[in-house]
Length: 176
Length: 433
Image 1: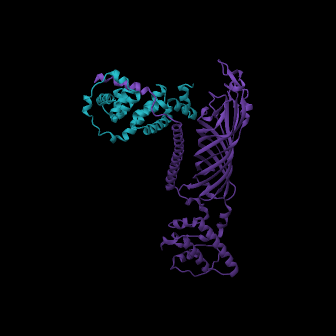
Image 2: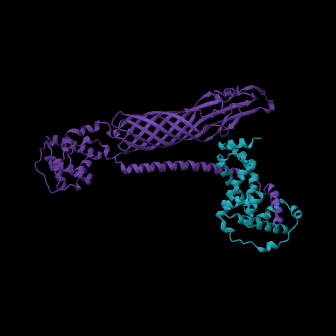
Image 3: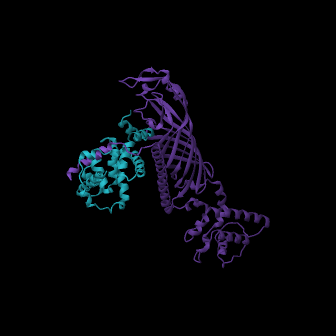
C-alpha cells in the first residue's frame, strides 16, 4: 500500500495514477463531508468533484503539517461555504423558532440508539446557519474563532448558533 | 444548554459512518475530464497572454515606427525645403515602378516617333507645374514629348493624390529633379538588394516547426547500478524516433549590422515511439546499502507478466527561446539567416507509457520523474524571402536538451532528447521612424 507521503509527492508531479489513487482512498470520506454540507446528493456530488479539482491544483501547497485528509476536508469545507455564500439568500431569512426551546430533553441513551443516518438526516433538516456551525464545531473540530473567521461572524454569534443548533437538533431527534 | 453537548458526540459518531451516497467511477471520470479541460484552459490562457503581449508591443511600436524609411533615400535626388511630402511620395515603391515603366515608354516613344523636347508648358493646371519642373529644373539631355510627360504627370497625380495637393505657388518647381531619377538611377533599383533589410527593425510573426524527435541515452553516474540487466534488450532498444512539432509566436529585433535577436512563446511537443513485447520472468533484488542490483529473483511461471505495448509517447512543453542570428543578403529579395540560441522548456504534461529501467514494469509517464524545467540548444540556418513588409522563411532546425530530461536524483538513465526538422515562419516587419 502506497503511503500518503508518496501519494502526495506523486500528485505534486501531476501523476494521474496517483491522483486516482488519492481519489479512491478518500472519496468516501470526502463524500460524507460533502453530504453534511449540502442539501442533497446532487449538490454533494458536484462539491466532491470541484473539491478534488481544487485539491489537485493546490496540492503543491500541502506541506505535510497535518494529515492529508484533514487538509482535504478543510478544502471541501471552504468550498462548501463559498458555494453557500453565493446562495446565502436561501436561508438568511430563517429565524430561530422559540418552540424548539420547549422541546423535551431525551436521555442520551435514547438518542444513542438512533441510526447514524437518522442523526445526519436530522442535521440536514436544520437551517443552514445552524447546520454549518454544528458541522464545523462538533464534527470537523473547528474552534469558535476559526468558525467566526470562516463565516465572517463574531465568536459570540458562532457560540449562539451552536447552542441553538444543538437545541433544534435535539428537538428533531426526539421526534424520531 | 451544556446538557446538550452529547449531541456533539452523537454527530461525531454518525459522521464516522460512510456516506449514504456512494462514490462511483463516474465521479472520477468527471473529475478527470474537468482536469483535462482545465489544462486546455491554461494552454489557451498562455496563448491569450502571449497574443495580448505581442499585440500590445506591436501596437505601441507601430505608433512610433513607420515604414516610410524602408526605401533607400539615394533612389531619389530631391532638393530641400518645403517639398518633403512630394519627396516622400516619390519614394513610394509603386511610384518608382510606375516611373520606371513610364520612362521605358518614353524611351520607346522617342525611338519610334523621333519627337523633340517641348518648349511649351502650361502653368494653369497643377500637373503642368511638374511638367514645368521637368523642363526648368533639369540640366539633362532628355528630350520628352510634352504630351507624354503630361501623361506621366497625370498618372502620378492619379496614383498619389496627395502628391500635388499641398504644393502652392510658393514652391519653386525647379527644386524638383525627377529627370535625374529617370535618367541616372532608376536602373539601379532593380539591381540592388532590398535595402530595407539594412534598417533596424522588428519582426513579429508565427512559426511552425515539424520535426523528428529522438534521444541520446546514457547512464547516470550514480544510479547506473539500478538498471535492469534486460533493460536495453526489452525496452531501450525498442524506443525510437517519432514525429513532433512546435508552433507559436516570435519576435525579433534586427540591428543595422545584420545581426538580430529573437525570442517568442511556443508550444512544443516531443515524442518517442515505443514498441514493447517482452515477458518479465524475474525481479531485481536491490542492495540495501548502495544503489545496485545484487541479484535477480526468479518468478514462478504463473507470475510471469507479459508486456505488450505499442504507441507514441508525447511530452508537451512551453518553449521560450532566446536566439542570436546573422543574416546575409544573397539577392534583392532573398537572404540567408542563421540562428543559434537556447530555449527554456517547461514540461507541461506527458502522455503515454514507458518501461521502467529497474523492474521493467510498464508505467504511465506521469508516474515517472522528469525535469519540468529544461534548457535546450537550438541551431538553424535557412533562406528567407523578403518583401518590404513581410518575410517568409524556411530553415532546417536542430535542437537538443542540454540537461537531462530525467530527474537524475532518482533516475538511472540520463536522457537528452533532440529534434531535427524544418522551421517555417512568416514575419511582419515594423520599422523605426
